[in-house]
Amino acid sequence: MTYTLADDLAVAQVLAAEADLIAIDRYRSQDLDVQLKPDRSQVTDADTRIEKVIREHLAAARPDDSILGEEGGQSDGAGADSSHRQWIIDPIDGTSNFVRGVPIWGALIALVIDGRPEVSVVSAPALSRRWWAATGHGAWLQQDGGEPRRLSVSRIDDLADATLSYNSLKHWDEYGRLDQLVDLSRAVGRTRAFGDLWSYMLLAEGAIDVAGEFDVKPWDIAALVPIVREAGGQITDAGGADDLTTLSVLATNGLLHDRVLAMLAP
Image 1 (cartoon, rainbow, N blue to C red):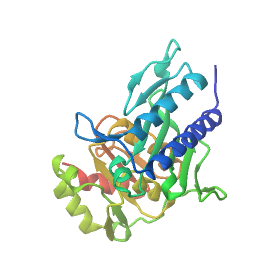
Image 2 (cartoon, one colour):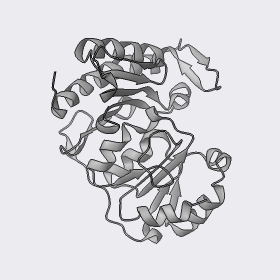
Image 3 (cartoon, rainbow, N blue to C red):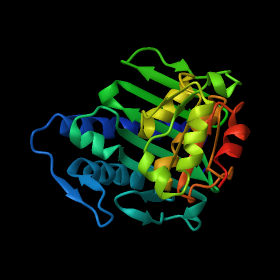
Image 4 (cartoon, rainbow, N blue to C red):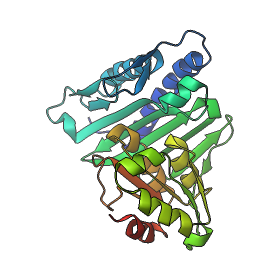
């Protein structure tokens, strides 16, 4: 079957609503089950349950599509070319925050068509915020159940006036870019480490101007792309490529992108 991006966005919104119900209930619980994965990152019973529910829903709503999830890996759809359309899911981005009671976490849901993220929803119920976008349909924010508002990145074009969110110093160091980050922090007006999905959504809202990190996977990145781009920003890896697999991401308001890339070059 042929679906419009609006059709797919409606499906993603339903998936986000299902994820929110499970996640916020477990976030408030006293019996959260937390395990360590082989890479020493945390996973909770909420992560696994949310991804299971999303996969079941997609199997019914989009049976021909493939799925890539942080917890369940890759699964092919029933279509002859299921890789043409792939849903990429992070059931809880910011699991360590989730476990510690920090409200900066949420579901990342994206549809990638022919390798390009075209539809996404980012939902952070503990912040009472949900962001979404589809190519050509704009980027939107709904807060506290109110009327959605269209998003637009900032128009700051001088690094000296810009705000940078850099996430983890440890990862910048491990990837050999700590010196470049320090140089960039000296060039911008202020630095923060909002972390995880929050940095990129603030950028789409126009509240900050540059955000980047290392040691990220496709499920950390895919849902950010349509929202940042539809808000007028630019998002690539740290080398300037449109690639979900290179373990880095850099988002800016677009006006600053080339200058930031030049400063981050190895």
